[in-house]
Image 1 (tube, rainbow, N blue to C red):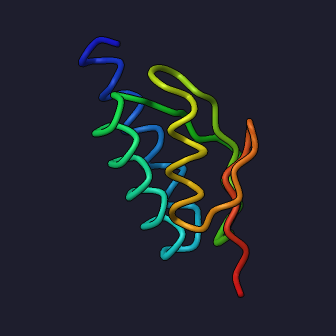
Image 2 (cartoon, helix red, strand yellow):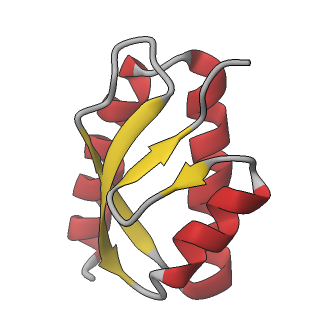
Length: 88
């Protein structure tokens, strides 16, 4: 992925994160850092629930299994298309 595409993806994901519950957004930022540092993996977020705890994602590049591994380490429910953290 080119530097420009990475920047566009970052800007898009930042907009999606801003819709979510602030604490959930921090969890997802940690996930992004982990999947990038462990395998140069990128995902694209979509359909973020306003002030919510669920967002859809699409795998863009890298090791797709890292999304599930990293998400599970953070206590998220990970499906092939969603990242979910219900408020307890």
